[in-house]
Amino acid sequence: RKEVEQDPGPFNVPEGATVAFNCTYSNSASQSFFWYRQDCRKEPKLLMSVYSSGNEDGRFTAQLNRASQYISLLIRDSKLSDSATYLCVVIHGRRALTFGSGTRLQVQP
Amino acid sequence: ETGVTQTPRHLVMGMTNKKSLKCEQHLGHNAMYWYKQSAKKPLELMFVYSLEERVENNSVPSRFSPECPNSSHLFLHLHTLQPEDSALYLCASSQEFGREQFFGPGTRLTVL
Image 1 (cartoon, helix red, strand yellow):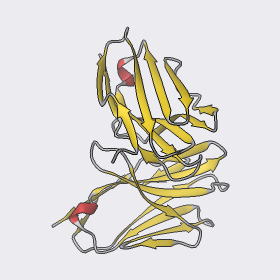
Image 2: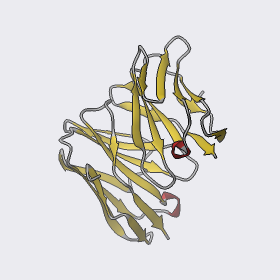
Image 3: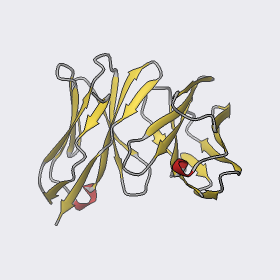
C-alpha cells in the first residue's frame, strides 16, 4: 500500500457544484496534514492545514479522520478558478513527509 | 511573490556538464527542501535541511549533491546527469520541519 494515495481524477464539475476529495495515508503515527493546489506548470501553493477538529476557510473545508486514516477537502460553490491539481501532504516522522500524486479538478462553465 | 526564489528558471545541460541550482528564502525560515517533480509522478522529496541537520532520501543518486551554507540559501549541485533526471526541481522552506511549506517557482531542467 502506498504511503499516501489520492484519486487522480479528473473530477469534472459544473460551476457552483460542491466537490470533495480524499487522501488516504498508511502510517497511523502521521502527525500533520496539509492541502496544496498546483496550477499547470506552476509551483504548489499552500491551500490549508488540516486540524484534528476540522477547519474551514471560506468555501474550503478540510477534515481529518484518524480512525479511517484519511483527510478530505470539500470545495463549495466551485469557481472556474478552482480548476487545478490538489495535493495532500502527510508528515509521518521526525523528518519524513510524503506528497500524494494529486487530484485534478476541472470546473466547467 | 518573492518569498522563495530559484535560479535559473530553465536549464539545459549535457550529461557531462556540472551545474548548480540556487534557492534563496526571505521568510526567516529554518528548514529548506529540494523536491523533484517528473511528469505524472508525485513530488519526490530529495533533501531536507533543518537546523543544520540534513536528511536525504536514500533513493537519490549521488550525482545530486546539496549544500546549505546558511538558513537562507540552498544549492543543488549537479554532475554527470542522465536524461531521466530531466524534471522540475522545486525548492521550499518552512518555519521548521513539518510546518507549512512555501515553494519557489522551480527550475525546469532538461538533460540532453
